[in-house]
Length: 165
Image (cartoon, rainbow, N blue to C red; front, side, top):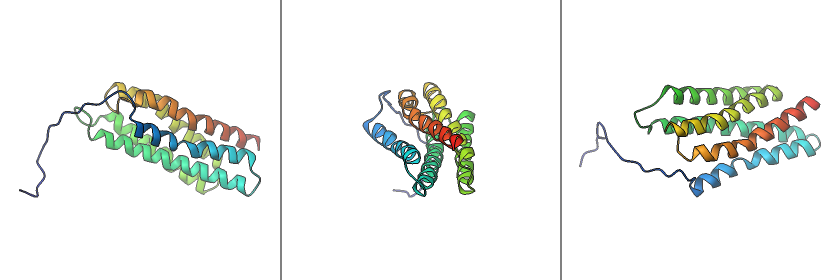
């Protein structure tokens, strides 16, 4: 037995179009803090209101940058190799998430929320397209539009509340 990895490998992958239950569970459980956060931001008094806003925005940043990593990870197993679209999407999501972290840290929550909104709308639109091109799991075509609608609605609500302040 050798400790060296093979120089190449070929494998066959069968992937169902149905969303696996762990995908549903982890996909939607990650959206719960958006709902709780926007409700707390809407209903709470200061200082809790400001804390709810900051925590919700930072959660959105964390999830967006995580999903950029998901896109990069999937690209390693794409039939035919990594595509330019996968790299551009990964960089787009990561840069939006990181910029939103910075904007949240320097107390520019409206700008951070707008960047996050762009990122989550991107996922809602581009992940189903990527699934159809075999650049993302097939189940992203059905999961992402409904899943990403949650942060999109919550971020729109957050933006409306910030503008109305």
